[in-house]
Amino acid sequence: MTKILPIKKNYEFQRIYKKGRFYVGRYMVLYALPNNKDCKRLGIAVGKKVGKSVKRNRLKRIIRENFRQYDDFLQEGNDYLIVARNTEELPGYHDIRREMKYLFRKLGVFNEEKWECSKGL
Image (cartoon, rainbow, N blue to C red; front, side, top):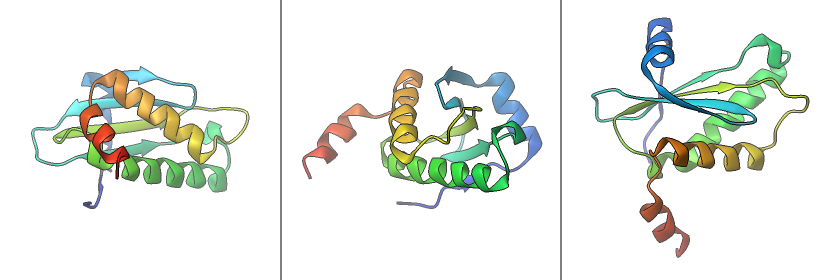
């Protein structure tokens, strides 16, 4: 398990928005773009419409932890950008986890074979 490298610069976010592939879910939008490096990077965007800072930061922590759980099963060399959507209630850990796996599969960056092998452990 390695440390997740963050995406912080505005121009990096803009590049992923413009050129990346994306899928929309109920709680989030997931973008993916190859980065020509040997690492995975993660950017999280949570707008002010989602709620006050406590709610936004909690949502970011939940998203970051779920990404860490799936880190070993994702393709190397991609930038991932997760944009949280505004919902009535704060989604729980398992709601985010289920949707994140679904979106990774839709984008074709999730390694199913590795996932099935790890279930037997």
